[in-house]
Figure 1 (cartoon, rainbow, N blue to C red):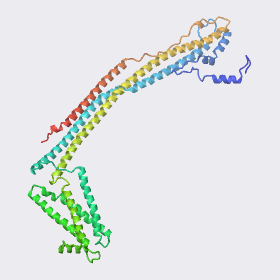
Figure 2 (cartoon, rainbow, N blue to C red; figure 1 turned 180 degrees about the vertical axis):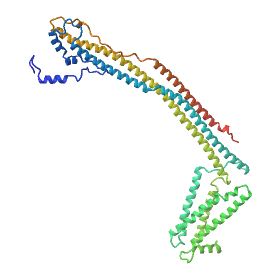
Figure 3 (cartoon, one colour; figure 1 turned 45 degrees about the vertical axis):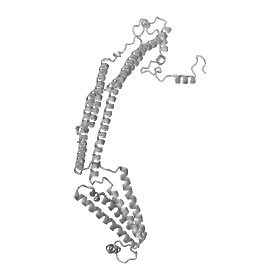
Length: 478
């Protein structure tokens, strides 16, 4: 602690140093910082200089102009005013850049050009879809015309009997199950006559079982079905095919039965021996199991042939023709659904884009209003700040002059009693409302245009969908 009137202690001097602000301004959150009068007065030592110069009666009583200390105060105040003005200009420039970035005119031009083009593109897309659908509808009519002509020529009044996916799966599964069963049965029976045993019999079983099942199915699927045709020649071919098939099935299964009875130790070619038995004694079998083997294979062959015969419509050619008609109709229906869905997506995308454009303009107008409001507040703050600068200058001059007067022995100059008037910088006028009104009017017109184009797109979509659905009337069936 220091004694009263003595020099401050080191701790007091340190505390005084720490408590000093880092600048001559009062802490604030405003853009323009107020001068800290006490800080500036301490820096310029106004009270001390006022007493020293007052003790010397300076400035003289008849002085008409400010002295050196007062000029220092005014220079400090003017410097602060110029700094504030620079900050004001920088902030104004930032607002100008923000206004320019809103870019209203370019957006108006793009929207006015792009919105009608979007409607035109949508109309063109609808026309292309109509052309595509026209071709699909033509194909349906051609297939139906061909089917009707086929039915008329063959005197068919019934619809084609087509297998459902479930029935087709069942028939193919039945073939697969019979093939597996016959392979197993053939392998067991043929292993007796094969010197390789069960493995050798399995190899022969796969070959003969595949031939028996697959060939029988194909006999029934193609040539035997000709027996249902109305043409005499084709019906005769179908009958001949049935007889040939029966001979084939009997011969194949007799071959397997004779092959089973061949002993593994036979010398020579076993196939040659089987052929001799078939030509000399085809129906002579020594073992009753051989007859069971023959019956088992023949029955499976008949089932496979019947499966092929009933795999599709029994009238040869009618089922495949009906399949083509159904496929063409499905393509037409799917194509129409796909085109409508595609147009719907394009419509929603275009409508959303136009709504977003209208929303963007509203947001930008709100931002423009916010910028105008901020610029107006900035201008008002700069005007008020110059008033504060003037008050600060008067306070600083008052500190100096009061100290000077208290130490004088002669009267103070007359201008000491005159208040200091700061020369103000013009802050400019308030931002005009003409541009804002013009922008607002243009935005309303643009929004109206966007609403019209959205309605036009919806109208084109409705028209296109109606046209697609009326395609059946434009190209009527027979």
